[in-house]
Amino acid sequence: MIKMTKEQLINFETDIADCFNNAIIKAPVHLYDGNEEQMIDIFKNVKSEDWIFCTWRSHYQCLLKGVPPEQVKQDILDGKSITLCYPEYNIYSSAIVTGNIPIATGTALDIKRKGGTNHVWCFVGDMTSETGTFFENWKYAINHDLPITYVIEDNGKSVCTDTKSVWNTDELYFAKETRKIIYYQYQTKYPHAGGGKRIQF
Image (cartoon, rainbow, N blue to C red; front, side, top):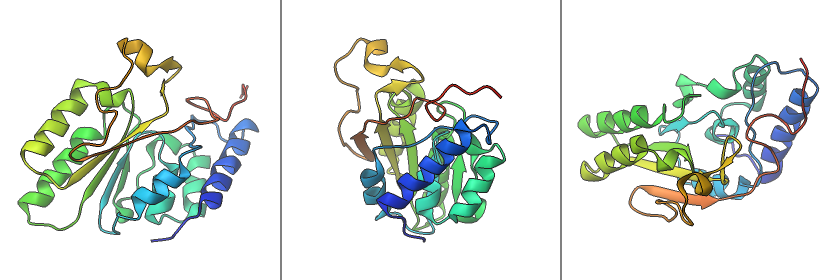
C-alpha cells in the first residue's frame, strides 16, 4: 500500500476544497480535516487484503489503502466523491446513512464462514453510531465473533446538527473503545459538506 503522510493527506483535501470552491466539482464533497494522525494510526493495522467500508467521507481511506491520489482526484472531479468504490482495493463507499454497515458485517460473516484471514474495517460517523442499525450489527458481530472493527469518527456533527443535542445526552453510547470498536473525536475546519464557501453552479 502507498504510505501517505499527514501533510500529503492535508494537501490533497485542500486541493479538493479549492476545486470545489472554484466550481470545478459539480457534485457534493465531504472533506476530512483534523484527524490525519488518527487515520494514519488506524491504517498501520490494515492489510492490503482487508476490506474497507466507508461513508460519503472516504478520501483518506482510499488514499491510505493505496488508491493512487491522481485516480481518487479524477473520480472526485467526475462527481463520485460520495460514492468512491474500488473493488480492486477492497474499498466500498456508501452515501446512504448506515448503508455500509450491514454490507460490512455480511462481508465479515462471509470471511469467517470461509475461514479467511483478512479483516473488515467499517467507518461510521457519530450520529450513525447512535442508530439501531449500528447497534444490531455490532451486537451480531460480537456474538458471532466476526473479523470486523467498527471505527466511529466523532466530529460532533450530523449534517448541521449537534449529535449530542439531538439525543439530549452528554455522552454518546459508544464514546469509548470497546469490543470491535475504535472511537475517536476530532474537530474539522470544514462544514458537513463542501469546502467552506457558498457556491453557485
